[in-house]
Structure formats: C-alpha cells, structure tokens
Image (cartoon, rainbow, N blue to C red; front, side, top):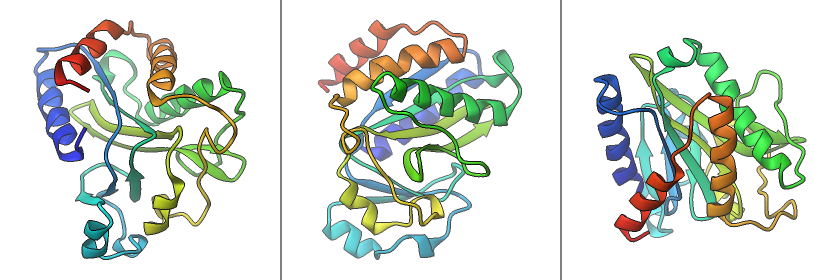
Length: 214
C-alpha cells in the first residue's frame, strides 16, 4: 500500500476510534520504497537529496510520529496499531515495550534470539537492528507503529542513518529464516493479541485485503 494512502487510512481510523465508532485496529502491510522522517528527526540523517531519492524510486514523507528517519519497503512487515490506551494501560512506555515484546516473541518462533538495548527503542539481534518503532499518540489513541525486516533489501538503508544511529541493520532472511511477510504477519498478530489483551479478528483483515485486490 502506498505510504500516503496508509497515512490517510490511519488518520480516518484514529478519528473513528477517538469518537468510539470502531474498536481497536491493527493494520499489517507492506509499503513500496519509502523513507519517513519523524517530528524530532534530523535532516542530516537523510543521506541523499529528495531528487536523488525520487530517481531511485523512493518516496519521502516528513510525518508526526516519534523517532528519526526510517526506511520502509517490500519484504518489511509494517504494523500500525490504532489502540485506545485508556482501555489497556495509560502508559506510553509500557505500550512501546509491548510492541517490542510482540516482535521479540514473533522472532523467537523462527529461532531468532532478539532483545532490547538499554536506552534505545526497537528490537535488536546483538548489535544489529531488526525491528524499528515510531509512534504517535493523540487523546490516548495510537497511530504509526513498527517495522520488522523480514526479507527486506537492506541495501536501501544506505540512504539513511537508521533512526539516527550508526548501528547496522539486519533481517530475518539474512539470519537464515525463510518466511513470507504474510506468514510472519499472522504469527505476529497472535502475539500482539496476547500482549495487548485483545482478540484478533483475522478474517476481517483478510477480507479487507481481498477487497482491495492486494
């Protein structure tokens, strides 16, 4: 799904969740090649001009999530939870730790031992980042979220300093796990539901994707 289209969908769902029209949502998808810059990001962590990005087929979006600069692209599972934290925990830190744990538990199913690095956000395999997080919260309703490198082409990270850090990145495929983004998404949804105390209506997501022809 195009990043701009996904952003508009998030904004629509956030407004509906804030007004109580819908239940919590979890969007799981892939984007074409895209680089986003968070509200506290630094342009110096973008290592190419917007013209150079465009010529490489990469879209660029300055957005209002936390975090610095991030790459999204094919082979990467991107998750956008639209949750009302008043119905879970009014704790932003616990929410971010919950997202991290969701990715950690998912990776463990594929024999990948991952964890946290003190003082840094995201999920790491030793010193290599495999899962990034950048969230936005308005009136306790969350948007934006996380990105897990499944079989991502890691060469595209050359255009940025990922999350403003000089540490390298990795992917499940690079670590020997052979899995599709769709398969990993289904397993991750199960862990997400357990950690955030919600029942995942997977058929709704499948139907929505089918209707869009994805």
